[in-house]
Amino acid sequence: MSSSPFQPLAAYADDAIVADGEAGPRTVGDLRRDVLAVAGRLPPAREGGEIVVVCGDRYHFAVGVLAAWEAGHGVALPPNTQPEVVRNLSRRSAVTLLLHDTDASEGADLRVWLADSAAQAQGVEDGRRLRPIAETRHIATVYTSGTTGDHQACAKSAGQLLGEARVLGQTFDVDGAQRVLATVPPHHIYGLLFGILMPLLAGASFIRDTPFHAETVAATARRGGATILVSVPVHLRSLTVLEEGSMPALRRVFSSGAPLPPATAAALIDKHGIRATEVFGSSETGGIAWRVSETCTEPWRPLPGIRVDVDVRGRLLLDSPFVPAAEARPYVGGDRIELVEGGFNLLGRSDGIIKIGSKRVSLAEVENRLLALPGVIDGAIAAVAVAGARGHELIAAVVVRPPTPRDEGRSASEWIAALRTGLREWFDPVVVPRRIKIVDRLPREANGKLRRQRLLESFDIKGASATPTRASEAATAPSPSPPRASPAQVLATYRLRRTYPAERSFLVRSHAVRRRGGREVHEISVQVPSEVDRGGAGPALARMLSQVICRVAGLGRPRRMRGAGLRQAVAPGETLLLHLEVERPEQRVHFALDRGGERCTDGVVDYTDLGGLREAQVG
Image (cartoon, rainbow, N blue to C red; front, side, top):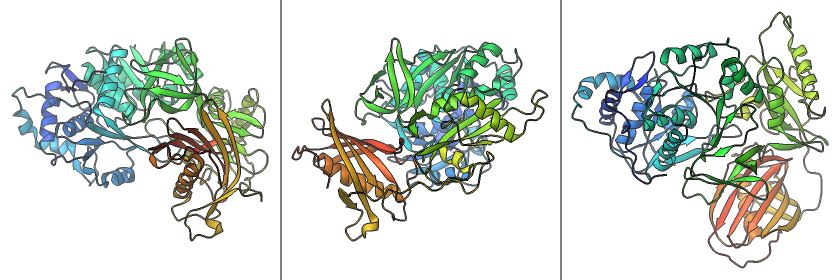
């Protein structure tokens, strides 16, 4: 990746079309004049200050982002455009202004600014170019999709965000002849990179509109002359119901945000001759790898400049220019992989394997098998804790095809029975979801992702360990609450405050130590207090982790803790398994907290000095 500054719009001639759509075409000259006009109305920039940009029109969004950068601001891009989410983000102390093209009363309506500044914009004809952007400058904060927990903020420098967009354009041969249509919103990092920044840096154009429904996607692509489609599996799946020939010839179709089901990949080829290019990455890491999928078993190829390896636990190790410079190298990802000739295979999330009874179950595998069943349009799987030897059970929400003469209006219970029968061909009965609910649609966000908590709420499940308050459409009785740890020896007690009673203490029930290579590996059974602070178990767990890790590692004063946040709700009285891997020469501890094989949180703690280098003890 080059260390030279990024020069916005340098790849275009002034009369080139940069955006087109129902609201009309815009040239690069139009874009430059609008950006400079809006930048001139923005408040003065301050250190760490950001502008929130929320625009449905992709051209307006590009104007807002480029104007913020031109005026010296960063941009804050919300995880979704729900009014309360945008409102809360706009109230952050770092935020200077909200720019939008909606009817909201808060912030500034970019459409009004552009109309009011038309005369000023027409006066910007002196050939002035936009200011270059230094590689190290902070330019954006994006947010994770929150599929397993709260949205997490990810700060991006120009080198990370614009550098990745430039690499994407070079990797996929995007040039001025290409026009990009995206079905994902521009405030999501995937939609931002592929739908706006990649074409802008490559000299290509983009379509202003963001269609979702299959017929509208096809019509917009034909009318707008799209050559590249940027989409997600759930939208691509809907294209497979269109008649052959309804999609225009596309040079490339991108898919990201979730695994592409093999059945969808095959149907796209059969119906439209489309071979989707899958892109693997995350908000935290940026893009990692890609593949052209026909069977969805092809190896993943790392993007240029990215090195991938695997650790002893099978986790992805990443060295990438798109990961923040402050992160340790290699960066430990949350996915399990295996290295193969030409790249690597994804084996699923490291926290996506659970045990049901004595069987190890991949949630991704069950979900993929569900999506491949006849008549299934969309579906999602989640695991919840239950009492007894089973430990967990699966739930499934499924969208099925509308009634046809072939099924004569099959009822929900008949669909559920058919789905169970289909899954039993692949899995033992204990693995088949105990509760299946037929729904009109899944509560997916605009980027196609589905937050686990919203799926649980559709079953009236309030948390990862809670049980439903009423039976689902599968007519199975609610399961009792998960058991608390049975009385056993207590090796150590960790109180949240010195003055707290025993009910506010974490209890260490067991502690096993072994060595693996140069690492010291600990597995510690910890019982959550029966009472916690008003803030819930999250802050209490963080305090407990700091106490236990310091006691076990004995490495001195912690310098930095990097973690993924609490991914699953934890209930008072539950028993968790704390995994610690101590790297004494590197002064580092990797930690992970599991509940019955389901990952609650993980991270790394770095230390400043070695302390006594003593063997770890608990108690």
